[in-house]
Length: 233
Image 1 (cartoon, one colour):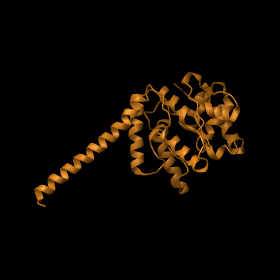
Image 2 (cartoon, rainbow, N blue to C red):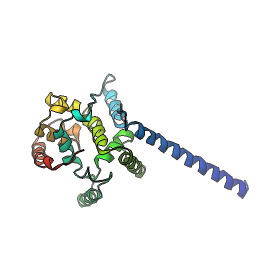
Image 3 (cartoon, one colour):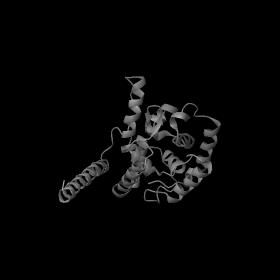
């Protein structure tokens, strides 16, 4: 193959790769724009969990009931922001100070014990991505986070997050969680009930085995004491 032909072949392959990447990113962006006004059905993360459950029980189903923002307790909104992302209203998708603190804590422990992900970042991952901790996945998460913050308002981000986040084995969203743990709707949660749900979020499938452990009791009271300071949309 001559140098000229090799050069043309390389340019064509590069153009195809660029086109493929643009189409793939356009697919993500299209869903972000669609879900701005339409409620998501099953997220990528939910699909993964369902597949895992059906390996054990082919008839397994997820528990999720979508409820609009206005029907979710203000206490839960404040508790989740206090526990997961206390700068939610102010940042543009990334809490750089929180990320730096997480890095320092992980370096001190010699392993990953803390993350610096905001609610927006968590939502980007849950909607579209796998749990793989690769540089490519983190880069894609960052790009989707920028789109969410650009095309959605904070109210919509929090509404979708509270409806799709995992709260236990096969339990997704505030309504299913409120019914699972307290036998009430998401709009009826008290401050303490809301705080208890919020502190379960980092590891809901582990914490649901003992939702009244000493650790969760202490953490719940900490969040109850802080949540009145949380600003929510």
